[in-house]
Every structure is written in C-alpha cells, then in structure tokens.
Length: 421
Image 1 (cartoon, rainbow, N blue to C red):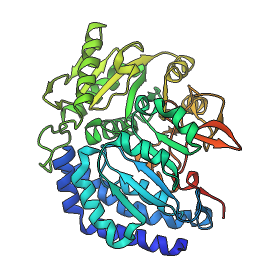
Image 2 (image 1 turned 180 degrees about the horizontal axis):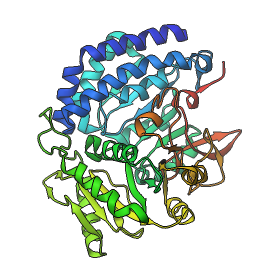
Image 3 (image 1 turned 135 degrees about the vertical axis):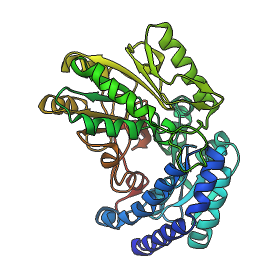
Image 4 (image 1 turned 60 degrees about the vertical axis):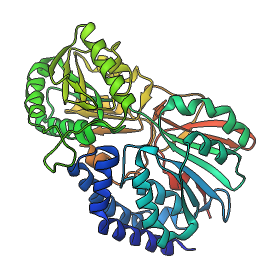
C-alpha cells in the first residue's frame, strides 16, 4: 500500500472523527471527566492535525516497516486523552506498520467507539485490545510479528522491563512524565506568559505531561506576577465536566489525586503559602497556586498531574538554569523574556532529534520554547514535530548490531518504527 493510499485513509478517518465529535465528547466526559470545552477543542485540533501528514510526505513516503512487510507495532496509550490518541496510532500506521492498540481501562468506551470508526476504514491493519496492559506488553515482547512497542505512561512502570526488552531484541519507545519548568524574566511579555501559563496549566484540569509544573519567576516581579495569576485562576469555573462553561473538572486518576494531596500537605509543612485553592473534594481539585516553594518539596520533585501550580522565585540566570536542570524529568521547558531568557533557553535545550546516550541524561529538555506558547511549540506533535525528552521523561531501548543501547530526545514514532526504503 502506497503512502498516498494510507494518507487517503487517514483523511477519511479525520472526516469520520469530525462526524463523531459529539459522541467522542460525551464519552470523554463520561469516562475521563474531561470538560466539554477541552474535549471539543481536542477533536477540532486533531481533525486538522491529521491533514499535516502531507507535510511529512518528503521524509515518510519511501519508508518501510521496521520489521518488514506484515509486521506490527504495539502501542500502549495513557488515559489522559481521547481524540489526540489518533495521532499516535496513525503515525505508526503511515509508514506501513500494522498497529496493535491498547487503550487505558479508563477509556474503554472511547476505545470501543474508536474501534468502530476505524474498522470500516483500516480493516484489520489496526486492531484494538482490551485487558491488562502488563499482559499486553509482555505478549508483545514475545510475539515474533511485533517489531517494536511504543508506550505512553509512568517511568516507574516501564523501567523494570529493560532486561526483557534487551533479551527480546525489540525496540521500545517510551513517552513519559514531565515536571516542566516555566521560567519568567522581568523583561518578559507578562500577558503572553500569563496567558500561556493559565491555559497550559489548567487545561484538562492539569492532566497533561507537558503542562507547566515548576513555575520559576524572577524575584523582582514574583509578587506582582502571582497577584495577576491568582486573579485569573479565580475566574476559572470549577464543576460539572458536562457543563459547557466548566474550565476545571474532577481529576480522572485516584492516584493522581492522592499524590497531589500529599504534595500540598508537604508544601504546607515546609512553609509554602497557598494563595488560592488548595481544596480537594473527592476527585475535584480546585485550581491552586502555591507560593514560596522550595526544590525539595514533593510538588517540585514529582509530576503534578492536576490543576496545581507550585511556584518559586529566582535571582540570577545561573541559578534558574541550575535549578531547572536539577531534575529527573526533562520533557519540555518554557522561558519568557529577552536576551538573557534566550540564553537560558539555549542552555536547557537538547539536540534536535533523539540520539544514543551512554546512560539516562539529565538536565536537558526535548522541547524548549522561548516566548512561544505551548499551542505553538506543540503544533504538529507526533506528525511533523518530534516529541519526547531526557532523563526519565522518555527514551528508546533498542539493539543495534547485537549491542543494546539507549537513545533520548525528541522523536517521531513514524521514523522510529520504520526504515529507509
């Protein structure tokens, strides 16, 4: 099957997703408690994004499946998404792979609808599997028809499989958490920074790996910046995800809620001040801003998968670079300001594309944005924009010429699951 034929099928998928928008949104609200507002936006974004494979034609059209004709790639998806998951699936399909897809158990209804949309378009080239994710991963590593496994998830769940992947000789592509620094200098466009922070931090009630997590603001503007941030956060509408007006709804994961509760307790005990929010009712976490956080606090060390902004001030560019780098996650960083801010952004930036590393590499970031909102820096992600990070935010395990190696940095599933033709 040619690139053009596959592309026509993906465009067909885009049209069918648009037709099914209302049903997808209903299930996102039901299964994941995502808001109507966020879910509508996601469907519109993805239906537009799928057409971007035309821009990938030059470097994808002649590629062939990693495992040869008829081989497949297994894809394990995280719960925090509905429509965007189609970009991950199609990125692997577009280079000729068959795709075995495992949705999160939280999204069973979303999976069923997705399967019903896909079947008439792709037949058995893309299949959907229920059951346990652990069993699916282990079966994929043993299946001789599977050339690679791609996983979205938590690093702690995947790290124990390194030896099994090495023994299998297969490739494993992992996309994991972020604890992304969001750095603001005094000469920044503060409206731009605030707009991006509020949007990127509280969309999906904070349940995205690329949401700003460690908010680092220059001391000279720290108090005034937080005052403006709190004003905006107070305007967010909290409540029923089915209400089109709602901005922040309950968090889908009980584990994420318990972790945030522990993070907030830890911050209080260590002297941080909660400026707004801090209340948890069931799985509903009210949008929160925390002041005077220190780097030893749980909310600055662990991923914050909810609508809570842990903030801190800094004095010098050298300080903020050192603090941003001193972390186990290196997915994305955002820096706002002039010439000094650009120097900081350059100091945090990893290589343009993933590359072999001697071991997990900390202190570098796969995506670094300078005066660029998340909606821009993430445009075309998974299709023409490589994503991924360093440290425990993501990696590739593979065996080349009999030797096991690790690669880190931003990557495209399409390229990593295929070979030049």
